[in-house]
Image (cartoon, rainbow, N blue to C red; front, side):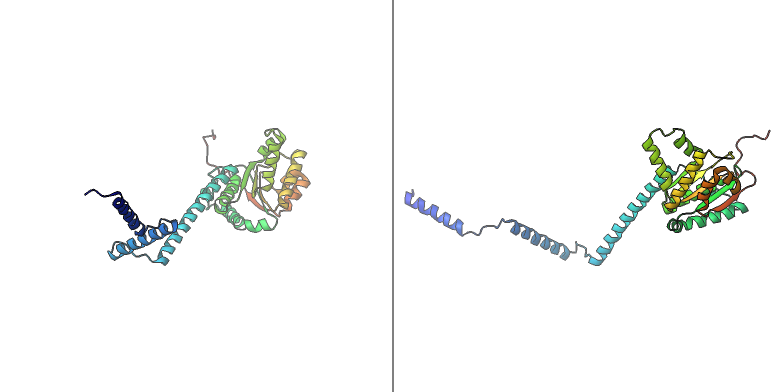
Length: 281
């Protein structure tokens, strides 16, 4: 039976009324978030009830993550220390074989000096607070002077992260007096490094010379005084005994060295270097 227009209108009005009465879903952000949380909690409860969700203790979890974080920090610190050690060794520019392990501890002269060297290393921080100190290592060529100083330097770098410059005196002279470093800013930077590095080792000072040039002696004296003012220690290596060194460097420079109250280590006797080739014929 065909409905009249009035009946059709009544049916549409009834449908609209029922739709208005149907509850609408709340799609607001707070409602959605709250619903997700409730749903997740319900899911967790079902998994736990079914025995498929392990039970975690908060204190145990906290301890585990703290240990993991501490281990990551430890590894990062170890990596940073290794990189700094490599950088310091490159800056020092030393023979890698100059270590205590490569020295003959059964040699009575070396054994005493090695013990003194370890006292110097262990007290290094103390000397930094007391104006610095100095070691004067002297003796004939090949007796182990550079090796002993290099072993001290390696130990200070690897164990204590100290900066070291190990430099032949002739190289210092070439760089500052004979134009090996041509740029003035670079020379100034090099001079500051000699003054400020934690430990400066000058090898072969006045080697084979009875007297240094006045300009070189004056520079060395000023360098030693500057390091003393900065509480920085120094090792001087020479083939001169103290009296001969005094004559070679002059009063001004020698007094600057004496201000450190240096420890004198004499390395004499036959050469301790391994034979290279056969030069006996």
